[in-house]
Length: 394
Ligand code: ADP
Image 1 (cartoon, rainbow, N blue to C red):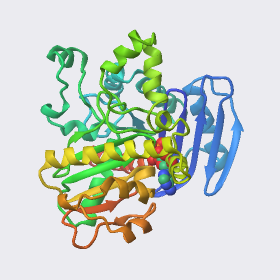
Image 2 (cartoon, rainbow, N blue to C red):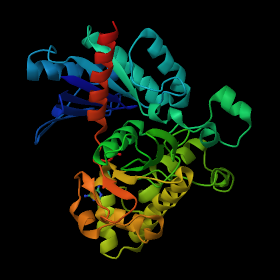
Image 3 (cartoon, protein in one colour):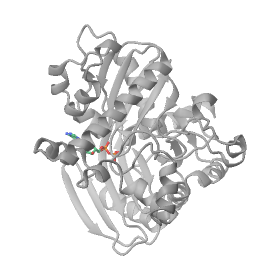
């Protein structure tokens, strides 16, 4: 089985996969805080436990203990795959963990300090508790390393790119890569050219040409682009100056406002969760209706932009909790786009909730697809592939 580890700044999520099946999952939150809690899930069963987890090392020890408890030891685990948020310009594919790779992740930490240092703690702790196992790192940014300069450079003084690495990196790469490859299979194309829309709590779109990412909506950090659950997405950078000068906010407060208090939550004043927003909008809540409108408009605007970037596309693919499940959001995004070759089939759209398949009319020149993503599963698969390739080479 492959153990997938996703270390956040104060959390550790783990998923144990036997081939494609999730056998055991867990989320340990509030690491280093007052009352860390571990939520374990096996099939439909869920169990909550209060645990001791002062740091990621102790959190990994709890994972080890759970495996011993359930399987009598950790021998069932063949390899470990870690999700890494930022691979900078150093990583363009998943890699086996070596001292050099760890050093590389540390070097990229300036770009995502909280995340990358947490990932490193996870890798090191895994070495303590799963001594002999191979570890693989899978990067959120890797798939977007094919984006050309004209799309990744911000029009800032060039030395900021050279010296500070300030540029667009893009995220959700594992998901964009998986759904675009799956779309190619479904449409029987050798390589996919189109737009992938990952709409979840965090959301981003990618423009993909012949299987390679050529642009994406997220930037230096996952804050840029479309509207998200609590993140603003694009704003005029001058909003920051206004908040600091006119409203007297500290930089940390502005950062928190843009990351945690904006998006669907900020606009609606009610919830970050699209299900609640949709329900409130149906019940007539004006701000929820507005949040829904701003959200779908921004996605639509980027589809138009990426259509222009690519010139021609095979398909638009929807994924992520919202993209997979909400037929209403997809309908709003794609309304009146027939002139651009996108014709949504309402009946197909309505029956596709969390199910893979085509939702465009048979005559639509551009296909519209729903492809459920599962980043943990994709990390497990990539981990297996890297281990296999490494075994074949050595
Ligand atoms: P994350 O980015 O944390 O992985 P997900 O991809 O699971 O998140 O997406 C979470 C979002 O998906 C939430 O806004 C949630 O409301 C939304 N969502 C899940 N199911 C539905 C549904 N049936 N209809 C509308 N939105 C949904």
